[in-house]
Structure formats: C-alpha cells, structure tokens
Length: 377
Image (cartoon, rainbow, N blue to C red; front, side, top):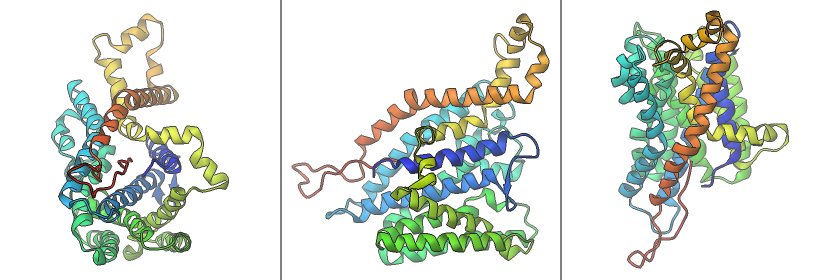
C-alpha cells in the first residue's frame, strides 16, 4: 500500500488538535459536546491505526496466491514496527532521563516498558510525558492484534470486530458504575472501539464494493452523530457510547480520505503543508509534550544556563514567564526537532523496512511467490 496523502493530512489535523488541547490558553482548550478536542485527535489516530494495521495484515495473509506463513508475517510486522516507532521514542525518553528532568526520570521504567498509562492510574496524569500514554496503548494493541488477524479464521473476523467495538463501552459502564478508581480511557480495553471501528472498515473494504462501502460510511456518520448526541448526558450507559460515536464518524472520514475526497475537505487534507505535517506527525506528537521540559532544562540547568544568557543580553527574566514567548519557544523546539528527526533519523531507518517485506520476493527457491513491493505506513 502506497502512502495515502490525505491520510497524512488527516494525521496533521489530529496531532494539531492534541497540541492545541495541551498548549491553548486557559479556558479555550476546546471541547466538542463535552469531549476534549485533544481526545478526539487521539481517537482519530487509534481508528487510523486499526484501519491500516488490519489491512496490511489481512493483505499479507490472504491477498497473494501462495500465502506467506503467518509466523513470517508476524516477524516482519514487529521488525517494521520496531524500525518505525522505537528509535525516536527511546532516543527521546533516554535523553530526558540523561538530562535528569524530573519527575520524568523517576518514571523512566514505566516509559521504557510502554506502561505509562498504567503508571498514571497508580499516580497522576500530571507528569512530564503524560501524553505518551497513547503510545503505550498503541504498543499494547500491537501485542495481541496481529496474532488475532493472522490466526483467527476468516469467517470469524467480523464477529471479532464487533466484539472489540463492544468491549470498550461495556468496560466503561462496569468501571463507572463501580467504586474502581481507574480511568478506562487510559487503558487499551477502554479504546478498543476506536481500533475496532478502523479494523471493521478494513475487513469490510475487502468484502464489499466501493459503492456499498460509501453507503456504509454514510451510515457510520449518521449512527456516530446519533450516539454522540445521545451521550450528552450523565446516564452512564449512554455516556459510555460517546467515544464510539466519535470513532464511527472518524472511520467514515478515514474511509473517504483513503479513496481521495474532493472539494474543500479534500483540499484541507491534501494541501502540501498538511501532508508534510502529517508525515512528521509522530515526531510532533512525541516532542510537543516534552518541549517545555527541554526549554526549562536549557534555561535553568544547561552548562551555560539560558537565564545567564538572557541577563547578559539585558532581557528581563519575566519574559520566560510570558505565555506567548513560551508558545513560540515550544513551537520552535517541536517543529525544529521533528523536521530534523524525520529527515536525518526516522526516514533513513524507515527505508530499512524494504528489507523486511510482508510478501517475500520471488526467488529460484520460491518460484511461486509473487514479487510485490513492501507496504509502508
């Protein structure tokens, strides 16, 4: 599967929503129907992951005439995920630990093992790197989903999708109706409806015609809006369906973007700025939540602290407390490091995935295997 530019554009708006929710001035972080706009951005990422990962795995399992052994597909999947996700992630968290940024260093074990979402259940969300909980959820999802996609009988896949979607609201009803002091929205089972909606679209797209899928996408929007509106209540069984409504609407948009939308929405998703920001969105997502910590390290703890430089230049120390100055600093650090990371670190490593295709190339020893390009994401 070639990169789909409109999906990259959608990534840009999703990560933009997350950044806005974290950086916007107090009081205007943005809520839509009681749901934080940053949460919606994260949910879009989850739906997109379910859609793309499921499609890649199903194509590797069923598309070629001579199926690649599932064990090989599974191995290639994890190698490719390692090359895409781990290098920047671990480079960033170990840099934060090396700079002795507290309390990040205290939680390094939880970050290194992708268990920070569990850590936040045990402590508090108000820590450096708290936004990385969603990456922990993604990795936990990757532990079991590929196995299900490669070994569950084809006839049972749709039932698996429906069960995955149902687990999330059911779990929330159970948790919210009990005395359990946990937030299901931070745990993998609490967001399975997002992954499941994306996966459902991917399965159906391989069984239905494009016209029928377009009709289904319209139904997704209708049902999603209905669920979202019904969830504007304190009645727990309905409130638990709010995220599912967002997931269905997101799934419909993702389906349209995968085909290529026209009109103003298509322009928004496919303009060069959005596509580029979507391409480097992984770096933006990781670094935006750590940019202030990096700046504060430079300003107070660097070998030549920033406050001394400011003093020599006659810049008042109060500038470092100015919201707009700090917004500029965080933006510059996030975009600057994300651009450098993509072009000189992530992209070269990403190119190594060509050595680990899901479908092996035809060789004299394996003449029945078709030569197909490695899928990218």
